[in-house]
Length: 114
Length: 109
Image (cartoon, rainbow over all chains, first blue to last red; front, side):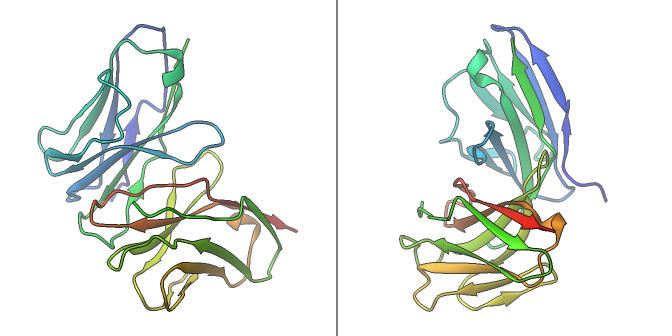
């Protein structure tokens, strides 16, 4: 089986544009996480899904950021009116959904806002 | 969420054991202690996790202090491929993993 897949691997967009980042988790994993990572920093938590619902979205920095997981598998992170400060690597992870289980991370999407 | 303290960096010689410490004095009684590592230009990778007892797997060992306020990740024989940033992460009832700044391990040939 494939691991967590994120597309695109790289995205360059102009300031003010809208972007969507996609995450395909491991089949059967009910938990899905989004993180973003700036250079030299640890991953920063954004949002966590359990099934279709966002169980914890406390890490979303503002209302320009939104994420969905309509069928409980694929998730999309949406960023409106991008700003240069949004430039980072966006990481997705999935896990079987219980505490004390292993989370599997994708390779990330590198977003550059110019 | 429990806070963690790890050394910013450590060095080890190849094929020698490495002990990576983590302080998590604010951990709650039901928080799991996870360790992940991140190689350059890759997503984080699971290493090991435990609750109260020491744990061993093919990658490493995890020694958890009796009071659970600290833990140590043990790589028995460091290789050049083990050079990475290692993160200690308590996982509580909120399920999310909160990463700190981690320990950058440098392995010397």
